[in-house]
Every structure is written in C-alpha cells, then in structure tokens.
Image (tube, rainbow, N blue to C red; front, top):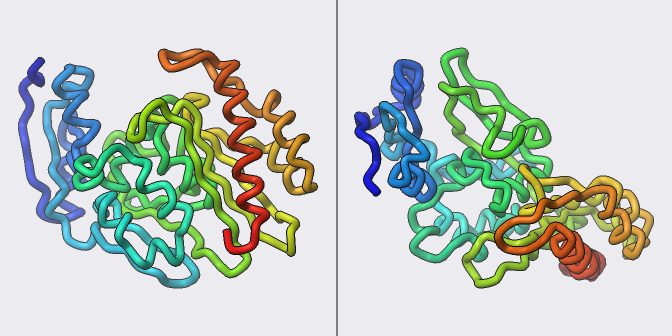
Length: 280
C-alpha cells in the first residue's frame, strides 16, 4: 500500500518543531523505522510530517551530574558504539545488539523507540529499569517525566499531542551497580516473546533494590515488584513463583500467555545469577 497524502516540513529548531506540531494533525519524523510502516499500511494518516533530523543538539551523548544524557536523535548504532554508554549505562549497551538488524539500528533513534512505546521493545524496559527520566518539550515549555510515569498503555505515553521527546537521562552506573539483560525471540532481530531488563546494587552477594522490568508481556513494560522483593531477600525460587502475581501476559501470535510466564521465570533465574556474579 501507499500512504495517504500528507504535507512535509523540516524543523529548523526545537522551537520551530513545537510550532509545527501545534498547528496541525502532525507526526514527528526521526528515524522513521516504525512510522514508515504505519504510514504505508495507513495505520497512521497525519496531515503533516515534521522532520526533526536537522535540529542541532538532539544527537549528543554526555555524562554529567551523575547521569548519562542521551539526545532523542541518537541513532541506535551510535549508542551501540558509544564508550560513554558502555561505561555509564551498560544495561542500554547490552540491549542495543538485540534491536532489529544493523540497517534498522543505523536509522532508528533512541527517542523514537521510547516515544513509540512498543510493549515488546527493549529500550522502554531499560529506561524503566534504570529509573530514568525523560525531557518533553511542548507549547507550555519543557517538563521532565520519570520513566515510572511515562508509559501509560498500549502505544500510549505521557507525551501530549503537541509534545516532543528531546532527551533521556539515566543514573550513571557505579562500582556497585549490577545489570543484566536477556530476551527470548524466535529469531535474532525479531521482537521478543519475552525479555527482561534487570538492575540492582550489590552488597557482597546480596542484591539491594533490584528492579526487574519485563517486555513483551503486557501493554507496557512491566515491573515485577513482588519478584523484586523476593530477589532482594536472596530467594530466586520465590522470585520466580512471584511472577504468577506480577505478570498476566496475554496470548499472542507468537505463543500463549502461559508459555510467556514460564519463559519469564527462565529469564529471572538466568539474570539473577548474572546479577549476583562479581563483575557482571
């Protein structure tokens, strides 16, 4: 199919982008890896595409004030190669090779993936697991939203219709930080049947404040809070058992909800071992 007719405008600045978004039924064009497909299938029929690729300053990665800041226009491939992300945000570094294929990572953007909020995508789960925050800019100015409050429902976020996601910030990893990431997919590059992004602080072999965020098991990334509590007590078996209360994955075209819950338990066992190992 071909997309429905639309107008096109290239934003000259962040202020210009906000002005364009406020004036029409508009959609943001960044990497376009999801948008182009939905346009061609006519699942999206905006009156205007606002191209933000020329806006300066949205493609930077920087470490400051104990955080790593990633501009919304940072490409997946750029993040994958970044020494700053490898050092300060190792969970994101671990997730990057699982995102699609090289051609997709060359064009797709960090901000685009998070703003699109596919519940089976890797980066929303990582940002939530890290307790990150997101900068949004709209007609009323700039505001910062914690990742815990950003993902509202299926493809639904705290972004207003005229807002633009401009940056993502996550706490920089310290010596005591432990991270682990894994997903189970039919083929590498496919969306995961089930995935897990995990973060904790270590005190010897004990884990403090673990955050377990699953993707592919609901309409948003899902924190397994009861499993987190069990894992903090050192009982991996109890953490796996707690998933029965934390997760209620639906059946989908890939597999049943029951299989997803079983696979979630497999990932908890694998990643708990990684989190508890020194140097992980």
